[in-house]
Every structure is written in C-alpha cells, then in structure tokens.
Length: 206
Image: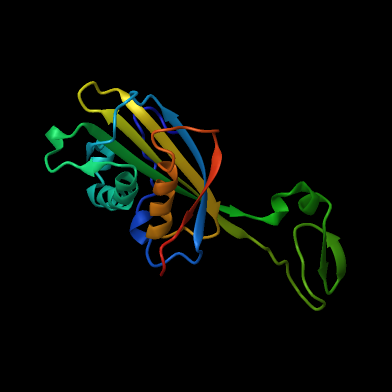
C-alpha cells in the first residue's frame, strides 16, 4: 500500500533491467487520483524529492525520475534549476512484483482434474501424451506493476495531488511502459475522476 509519504517498494535492480522497446503499441493502466489542488493555481516549477530509502538507491531513483519527467511536462510543470526555488516538490515511486502462477492453483484442476500417462489417467495437476513417463507442470509468470506520484506545495508541505497507475502482464516491462504509466497517472491533472478508471496511453514508435 502506498502511504502518504509515498513509500517506494521497488524490487532490487528491477528497473535497471528494463530496456528496449515495448512489444505493444499502447499501455492500459488502472488509474486513481486524489486532488486537493488549490483553485485557480497553475502548475509551475517543481523539484524531485527523495525519501531516505530512495536516496540510498540513487541510480535507480534517478532512472525512475527520468521516466516521469515527460508526464510532468505534459501536465504543465517545469523542473526548477534550483530546487530551493521550486513551487512544488514531486516524489515518484514504483514497484514491480513477480508472481509464478499455475493453472493448478485452481481447485478444479488440483483436486478434480485428470492427468494422462502411459499408465492411463489419474488425478492431479499433471498432463502428458501417451508414453509420457512423468508429470508436466504449466506455470505462467505474471508481473504486477504500479507507479505513484505525490505532489506537495513546497512552502506548506501540504500534499496537493496524488496519482497512481497500475497494470500487469507476462513481462517485466520496459522504460517506455513505465513512462507511459506515469503519463496515465497524470493524464487528468489537476482533476480527478472515477477511481479506479482505465487510461490508455499510446507508445511512441519504436
């Protein structure tokens, strides 16, 4: 769960392993936003702010921030040359969790399914062609991905906007995919909407 301080749970080295072009043309994300944006105020200058845990992983965090810059620019923000002069501070975080899922996690297959071998049929999470001497398992790896953005008024420290975007798939993802998730998270800034809602972002040409 993302806490108000935007605790980042990023798998060690995960983003460092992201690279190349995404194999898809668009990224769909489930987006939730929460706004206390002051009426009549425009997006202006910002500076990234890091938690102590993010400071300890400076290279990973710098890479993550580079993925979020474009979405902040699209939302109307400009990165301040001097962090102390910025009107807002921005914290970004991401997590990528891996799950190995077997179809036999379903009780139907585990308890009631049949497997086939040279000895005929039996019960269990197995399958094999005639003459097959042992069980065969079918596992699928899924990745659950989430990014979050927390924007504060620098002077008061008040959180004025929070956004999250999540999706999953059978690959860890790519730099372009994570960047698209940040863009989805800030798509409606400074407005909110139905939480969660589906947002689609087109990926740039490979």
